[in-house]
Length: 446
Image (cartoon, helix red, strand yellow):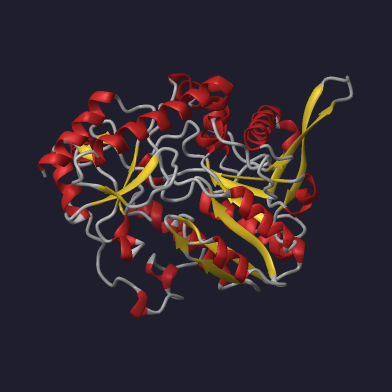
């Protein structure tokens, strides 16, 4: 410890003596020698403050972000515009340093922020209840699957291969330690194969997970899927992009029982992959099956508006291993930023972001495929993402784009071998016509 904290040898000896240990090495005697590094950890020579700042800035400058590049990459994390007020308010010390409300009723500010977040997510999704909140979209979706299993007492979850590959991987990880199985449904022309879905449904099917718009940006036939799912008395779990709900029907209107999604696009920056937040909403009858916390509104002794922690199905309290979930973080700061974003944008703002994203994405699609060099992978209606392919290797296309400071599309061959040269492009409201035209120009000369 004295190697990293400026304590003298005398300080270290005093601390070791007080706990009855002869040396720092003795603190690690329970760790087998073969598992130890058995050499000094090389951190380089010590630096002055000035030198260290210069070194860290040099490392930082090696990164390139969406501040330096024009971003056409999506695939689950999106470069949407974030109003300046979001960071301005969220960085206030009373928010920025606030911790999970273990003594909830004295944390009225934190509880109110969570309550407002919950209310807006319910309005956005058309569902009755939501928690606050989950680690990310993938874990939120898995929690939705476990809710369906618990509620129906069935042992199988069906998931479409058009659901984000990372969501399906996280689901597979959870299943290894849970008493249910996952069955994947193939896609047909970039959307869920309805015939295979129908034929796979059975007495043990607890729920069906469908992403809409799906991983390829395409819109699923949710009316048909809802009918197939509910005729089997299974639960419909809808994984959704919250910005798309500015123009698409809400999951509630489409008959979903459980809704999950990634909340990063709600005022949270890309942050090099995290931290993000997952949202999870459901029908009122499932409220006691939800993991995490639910904040409610009440009145104090003076009749004033007050907020309370209504439900918290967590393992750290009396339920322990009988808890609904092992989720123990409400991603409070990320949820706060989502709440500020939704408040700032309002219904009209969210709709405008969705409309502009859709219109610009369709313009980009038409321009990219006009010459025939790049062809559509699927012929489906889409929201803000679309897949194209060519005779060129996807990685080579992206390398060429990067040379022009353009962050290209997601290489679909990573997760779908049959789409080896496929690229998934995303266009948000931030992209200008000039930027899209520049993308098309570079693609044509590669």
